[in-house]
Amino acid sequence: MNATQNNSKKYGNGTLILAIVLSAAAAIGTWETLRAPSQALAAPRYTQPDPLDAGVQRQTMIAEQKKTTAKIGELVTLLKSGKVKVIAVEEKDDKGKKK
Image 1 (cartoon, one colour):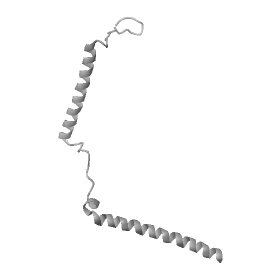
Image 2 (cartoon, rainbow, N blue to C red; image 1 turned 120 degrees about the vertical axis):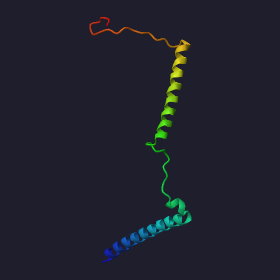
Image 3 (cartoon, rainbow, N blue to C red; image 1 turned 60 degrees about the vertical axis):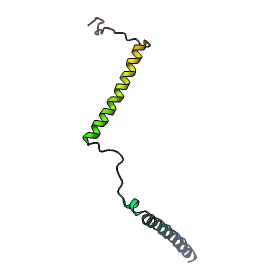
Image 4 (cartoon, rainbow, N blue to C red; image 1 turned 30 degrees about the vertical axis):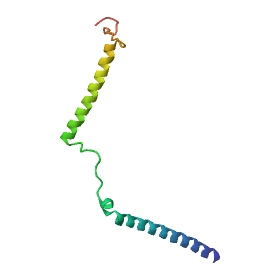
């Protein structure tokens, strides 16, 4: 019977500790809600714009076109500098003849 009493005390203490921890967590949650109810209950806001909005799509396309234009400008500058040369080669078929 002594072993049974030890097991009861062990499980009883564990259950008591668990109840205390859960009560503390609930109390902290309640305290935070009461302290700043507008922040705790407010629905999360979307940080990204709606992808189906035509205005947003247009602005995104314009931004991407500006990036592309800048990259093409860099390529033109590089080609004009003479550091890069473009050599055209005629295409040959499988038998080595020019097409």
